[in-house]
Length: 214
Image (cartoon, rainbow, N blue to C red):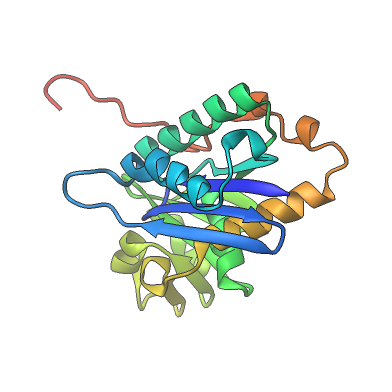
């Protein structure tokens, strides 16, 4: 089964192109002039060419729907929607927290910075948006997979062990591919279970509204 996975919601552009046990992965860090989603389509084209594949030969897509960067979520979903519609492909949707949880390989929880003194908290397959004052009750004495913002705000607090995923070099692209393959293999009807019409952003928190004077 040939699956293309991609994510621009987290700290880098993550892309995986796999066929059963064979999977090629790519990570691209953004720079000062280009947001990392700018690399998405050119890199997908290059990876397909390297494998002598065309988009029409793909069996499924997989995309991270967030939470994360609002711009990044929209970028990845837009590409996924266009490709899925044109090629009539199923699209497996993942969320940032389940990807990080799977990458950590243990019973940790996930805590990500949602800005404005709020945080995304993930435990037992459920994402919550919590206030800063609620963080201690959620993570006390636990192992916490987090981003740089959370590490900066809470590292060393509440008896918790904080692991900044941005410094760990987790193979997030291959993790996405593994999760997508598992979900597709478990489905009796992938095109129905993962219909592209069901694609939606996992913002959780309302995107910021910018007005003149802000």
